[in-house]
Image 1 (cartoon, rainbow, N blue to C red):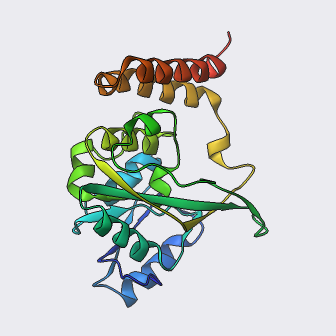
Image 2 (image 1 turned 60 degrees about the vertical axis):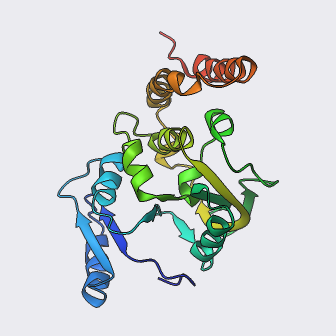
Amino acid sequence: MSQTLRPFEIIIADDGSTDGSQDTIQSYVDRYPDWIKAIYQPRNIGIPRNRNAALRTVKGNYVGILDGDDLFLPAKLEQQYKALCAFPEARAVYSNFRRFAPDGTTLNYRYPAPQPQGKILPAVALFNTGFPRTMVADYDAVKTAGFMDERFPKYDGLWLTIKLASFCQFAYTHEVTVDKREYPESDSRKNLDQDYLDLSGIYTEMQPLLKDMDNNTRQYIQQYWQQILNQLKPRS
C-alpha cells in the first residue's frame, strides 16, 4: 500500500489461518473494497494451491508475489517498472533483496554483484532460488507457464522461474527492493525428504528445456543438480 507506484490491485490469499489474520485482512478489504480483495481457504491447503487461488483471479497485466514474512520496500514497483521500460524485450524483472534476522540485524544480501538479464535460463537452471521473492512478471507469461506447480510444494517458485526463463527474457535491477525475514525454525528449513522429491521431479521435468544449450553448459547444469540430489537422497 505504500508503493510509490501504486499497484492496480492487491489480492490476499489466507491459507486457513487461525490466529486472527482473517479479521485483519477483512478490515482492509472493508476499507478499500475497490483495491484490496481476499481469498479465504476454509482449511490449510499448502503454499502452491493457495498462491494459485490468488493468481487465477488477477486482473492486471503484471503480477508479483509477496510472502507473509517479506516486506516490499516503497520504491520496489517503481524501480522495476523503470527496469522493464529500459529493456522492452523483457517480460519479467527481478532485483536484489536483503535477508535480516528477527531482531532486525542484516544477515546478507542475495546478490553481492549485479546479475544477468536477457536470456537467463542457464543462470536460473543452476538451482538459482529466490527469484519469485522480487519478481514481477507478465501475467500472460505466468499463465502460459502454468502458475505454481502443486507437485513441488517447497520449490514451486524455482520451477515457475525456470519455466518462465525458458521462453521469456528478464530485466534486472540491482537495488534492494525486498526485505526477507529469516527464521531459524521456518518450514523451509525442514523436511529434506520433500526437498529431494521436489528437486528430483524438477530435474526430470527440466531436461527438455536444456536441449538448446551448448553441451558444456548443459552438462555442467546436470552435474550440479546430480550433486545436490546425491546429497539429499534418502539413505535407507
